[in-house]
Image 1: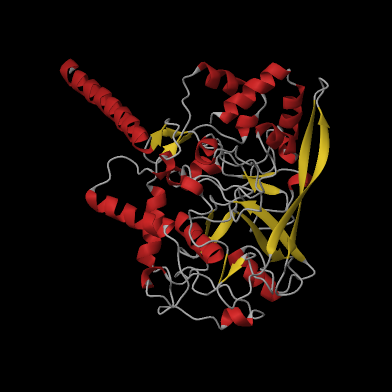
Image 2: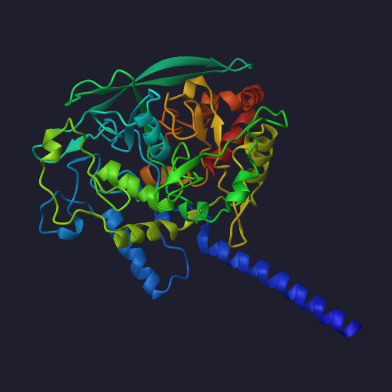
Length: 456
């Protein structure tokens, strides 16, 4: 009997050891602490030859510019007629976050204007809301296009002005925040609808896209507290959105308002809105009935510019990129994280999720919606996300931005914050207590926290 017990114990220990080792090995397959400007371009370890071929194919469709139809380059024609950029990577430099301004100090194409109108509660509007989550602006559609193919007028440009706002800390230090005053100019198709809503958003980093997909929905949903039952002032709400692939409502994980459920859908939406490419998910060009030149522009040979195998290849490419995550074993990390927890930042910017593959990741997001206050309201509703609600922004990998672009990352959904301190000071709504607690810290602790955030 004792012999049998020993065998069972041995097998159990072996299983635990092997599982832990397996998870540990998988973690290093996906994640790196290497601070390198090219890290986010690398594939995960261990791809087979066939998998590497798909990865390279996806990368080529992600990186190489598309051209307008008709073209001899039939594999890549279909650009526009209205578009913002001619490739995916032009808004995600080295797969990182977009910039707010170009080197010439012009508004970057990585900043886009999402367009919608408020619902009039008509049957037609309600039907659109069920599947899109918002009502597109009738003349310009879902997103302002800053470029048009030859003979097709572009839709307009984004202009940014700033208003200085002085913020004073309890210890007497002052800081100037710049409140953006965005506007649209050179509108070539007339005025926007009188009830239009314009939401300005900057392209997010692609760091960790693969691993977000590996988090079980239950792991995200267990952090919901819609009615604030624990009275900590922080709620957290999932955004259940319509998936055109499953034709069901699913948990939204992607975009600034968690309005997209699947990575493949996000690729298709970006291809359509940013480059003007049709897919099986978005089969129509983004020309409204008010845009005659767009409707009459030359068409590609095939109706679908990005066939499903190529769309799958791009999705595969994004799912198999290396993810950057900070080294947790340094004293600076541990000291900074302690302050991060003390301020309750970690209640929304959750540092640990277990993936379906058994290893832990540190995205510093709960992927839920939170009310961020009036200052960050964009006036736009997307499925369950109201005007003031945003998905908690993942913080991992932002430290790579300066390596990639030589500039500090512009933070928050519209890039208004020049650094982490400004981003904290813009936090309102459910994050008000954390912001005020930060402002009340002694300066040395504030600096230690900022240093920690800059290393994530």
